[in-house]
Length: 469
Image (tube, rainbow, N blue to C red; front, side, top):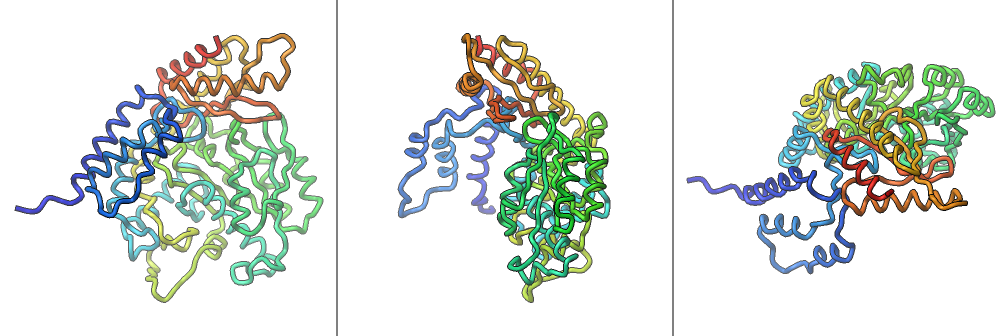
């Protein structure tokens, strides 16, 4: 008789606890309700001299984290652009951990290498990007930005006779980044890591629709036409889901020799929907694009995608060879395209999600989420003392709660908006977040989960109504 697997007790207990969590998301509070003190008290055990049985470790981990797990995997989480995990994606992610492949190269992860090749082709097709663009699977959109901007840095400086990978940035021509004032902080983080600095960004005023206008961009380009320049455009900004006018802006930027990078953390996915893809008309003319998998594709965290229209610049910015590392000319070696070598096999979860959904499923998920965001915005704004900024263009909306007292100031309305959002959080029925847009505070509506349904929307509106009234 064969000996029982040493993995079975821990994995079986983990499965039971995982299903208990996932199957009861609709019954539990979306907000974490454990205090910081209680979590520290439970989890901050002394490290014992002797080990603990694996299944007991799992059971105690679940017990000690109780109340500290946010219900972001469920359908009533609307605080940030955080998707859930599709069943196939979650299953593939578990297998990724079990297989424990180092997805650096074909030699140490043959199946993952091929899965990444397939995912890259599927994603470019689904997102309507150039079929000959290179790609990278990263830990998220921030590292996708870093990857794409590293390629941009290489290309822009190479044109000026500077090899940044060998010579560094000391003495190199300074690169500027022109963007609307609606850019995301993940871009500034990428610029810091690339040595370009946050001061490289020159924010330009956006119009009332949150877009960068051609006349504004051209004036900035004309100020210093010889400076190596990246033009950063938005594909669904984080507050109102704004899309820039790519058909005008990209050819304009290219006339001045600029590299155009698209921040499409979630908005790039609307190219999969016939209903919404008009918002991205012309986006395929850009030089690079970044998006997330753990947002609208609904795979577990640690998933982002970078695409670059100039594979040589991408590869030159990322690749490195060593004598001890195997290299196979017949396949795409992952380490030539990503910022890190040792990493998990991110392709498996993305592959599984795309197969589970198919083209129609991705489009349906996007459209259902956009419908839900609109229903939430309209339902909440119908309550007394609530105003909506504008009809959500895709899955993002902003509402503001007015202080009913006579003579209330904008600061009073700001305070009431924050207070209402916090009170809704305390009900446990829904989770929204706050943001500042155009100098005013708003409650932000963000819908990105495959499970969000009409009942989730109704419960969220009812929770807000109970607080407002």
